[in-house]
Length: 184
Image 1 (spheres, one colour):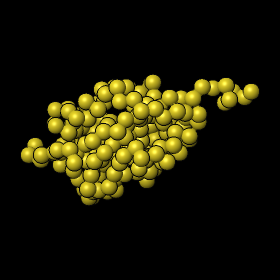
Image 2 (image 1 turned 90 degrees about the vertical axis):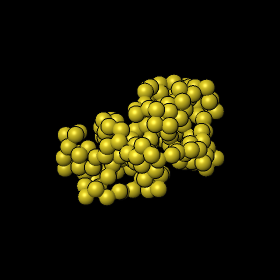
Image 3 (image 1 turned 180 degrees about the horizontal axis):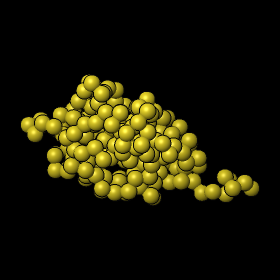
Image 4 (image 1 turned 60 degrees about the vertical axis):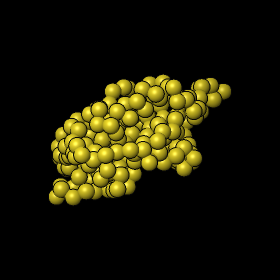
C-alpha cells in the first residue's frame, strides 16, 4: 500500500446559509474555515469537489451545520452591522504567495478599500500588482477575507467572484449606515 492509500480521508464539514447576498456554502476542516462559495451547495457541488480533490486528495464532504455555527453567527452579525471583523481559525489552501495576499487582505479595515498596488506593496512585492490581482481572484473565503474591499488604482470597482452587484452591496453595507440588509 502507498502512503496515499493508507491516509484517511479529510473530513470537510459544510453547511448552506441564507444571507442578504444570496445563499452561501461554508466549508471547514478540523483546523478551520477553508471555503466560502456563493450559491447553493447543489450549484457548487462539482466545483467544490474539484477544489477539494486538488487541495486535500482523499476527502469526504459531510453536512454539519453545528461545526460551522460560530461562523454562521458571525456572518449574521456582520450583515446586521454588529460585527466589523471575523474571529476563528482559517485553513487556507493555496500557494505561499496567495496566502500572503489573503493575509494582507485581512488587514484592510471595515469600511475602507485598497488597491492591488497597495496590497502588492504591503507584502513587499510592489511590482507584483497583476499577481496580487490573480491571488485576490482565487480567494477561497470571500466576505471573511475581504477581497470585496479591493478597488482599482483609479478608484473604479473591479471584478469580484460573486459578481459586481454583490461587491457593491458589501461595500455599501460597510460604508453606508442607512443601507438596510435583509435575507433574500
